[in-house]
Length: 332
Ligand SMILES: NC(=O)c1ccc[n+]([C@@H]2O[C@H](COP(=O)([O-])OP(=O)(O)OC[C@H]3O[C@@H](n4cnc5c(N)ncnc54)[C@H](O)[C@@H]3O)[C@@H](O)[C@H]2O)c1
Image (cartoon, rainbow, N blue to C red; front, side, top):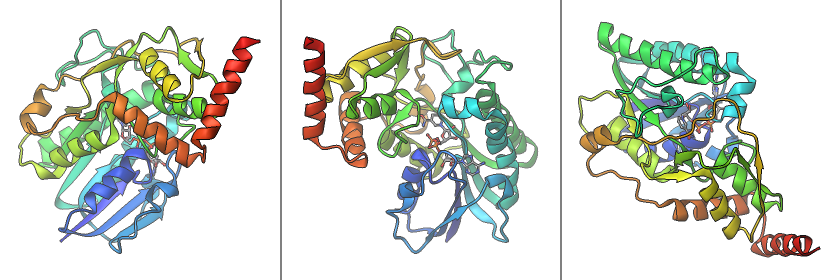
């Protein structure tokens, strides 16, 4: 029976990963360590499993006498406004967090890390294979995130090379879905929160920049297959994402339609916003041939909007009213 630690488990992806881990019968204890910087205790409040416990702590400061068979390191903000506000804290969460977590890993245990497609920077190659070295500016405003992901990858692969660490590393592309914070600051959650509260949908730049939107259930399924289900010698880095590239504007228009016709306004792009992002899934198809992003963005965005509506206690009638008020305003 295994002891498992999920750092960042009260966050968006971490909480879904915990749900998935708790389906396993070979786990006797699952501890989430999270400082609730960008995560929320509500994300794990539904878990009633006696094997589960929550510790509120910076991962860098976490102390325990236990050693864990599997450690999942997700502790890092993923949204640019959050990590750009606190770069030192972001670097610490990823890198110092990884050092600390290596100390609590049982000898022979497995270390799983969520790196990011941001390691490709603003790519000149599309789609991006894992072998693409990317275009990251180490002095730019996104460097705290991009470079701490790159450096943590280096640390873990070097630990593998010199000490045989059992490591698995994924590079997720854009993920969206239920349990994202309404103030998360990324496109789908922004659009949903804005449209449902009667505000205009804000698109940065001309909206023609593209992303590969992966619905959370598909992405967590990919993590589960790679991290523990499928037998494979491949340690990563492994792209996990949807390879259907959609423009930000198209998603905004779709959310607007679903939410009663919210108007779309354009604002200047944030610094170093990548123009395109699309995973090359050759390796993913090889190590987990039965996996794919099965949920279309139309279905996933509709589900996400529904979750936001419940979360923000907004009834369909209110959304319709917001729509009619807008139509009234437009007519004046
Ligand atoms: N969501 C995406 O689209 C995406 C894409 C690529 C990579 N990732 C990576 O996946 C991981 C999870 O992303 P997410 O979207 O769930 O983000 P999130 O912000 O919802 O979750 C991160 C969690 O880590 C916690 N945390 C941050 N610093 C911590 C620290 N020092 N000590 C303890 N807890 C800390 C936060 O409170 C939060 O609960 C991150 O490592 C992120 O870089 C996410």
